Length: 331
Ligand SMILES: Cc1cc2nc3c(=O)[nH]c(=O)nc-3n(C[C@H](O)[C@H](O)[C@H](O)COP(=O)(O)OP(=O)(O)OC[C@H]3O[C@@H](n4cnc5c(N)ncnc54)[C@H](O)[C@@H]3O)c2cc1C
Image (tube, rainbow, N blue to C red; front, side, top):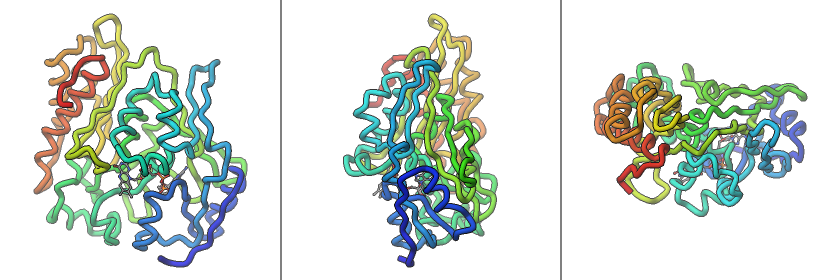
């Protein structure tokens, strides 16, 4: 591990000041379950680590009754979130957290850390960089867990967050603070995640000196949303494919839908094709199946990941059935 300065601010303003780009390369530390292993392996080597664990405002879970929104601090742990009962209307998020299925990670890991965690790509984790010439190397190498969508450029990894597809499907937004002392902005989750184009880029739009302070979930009319993950085992291994679906129903018909795939592209992958396949129709086996097929219709395969197409199709079908309150099978 490289030497670094450690800072433990108590307020958002102090954290932003400590992260200021002119003060050297800094990393945010939340629960540390993802960052610490990366520091140990020197995959990331900041000159300063800024722990946000002591900032009370980032630990809140608050319902804004006037707007019907649920405001979640980025520093809330995944376990605190599950135990809070605040996710009653947002099963899509609950399903994603439960999928981690690790008491240790859920007790220590935070919401902000989960959505900002770095890719699990083994080329990246073994110190070869996220992009550089990796695009070509990954295409020719062991790419069985890599992307089947959005993989045309140098980025072949899949986005690591399990919760992100649900946030995009639910139309969540993120409050971002910094780099200036009083600067804040609200970014839709759908615009927050992005495919890095060069090695210095992140998998999101955060610039040096910025951090996510809160996640805002809009009111939903009913809890017709869900995440379905296709997993190899019940442990904390990453899913092989996943999908989140959020539906608005008019009687038995789908009035509006958002379907977002996970673990198949360098970003959570919205599928307007899947949504269109169920729009104005009832949800049943055959419409959900058609949505699954539409979601992977533009898949571009690498040498070793063709199997993910069927898994992604199934994830979409089952997420839609689950969101509509139907038995998706497969448990
Ligand atoms: C063995 C193992 C297995 C794992 N399996 C899974 C799994 O199956 N599913 C899963 O989802 N995760 C898994 N993880 C990863 C991780 O534990 C969780 O994603 C966790 O929620 C990360 O949260 P954290 O608070 O510990 O993040 P940290 O490690 O503190 O931070 C993660 C990243 O996010 C950045 N960051 C943190 N908070 C913010 C913020 N508020 N604003 C901006 N940037 C921020 C950090 O700088 C860092 O780059 C695993 C980790 C390990 C070690």
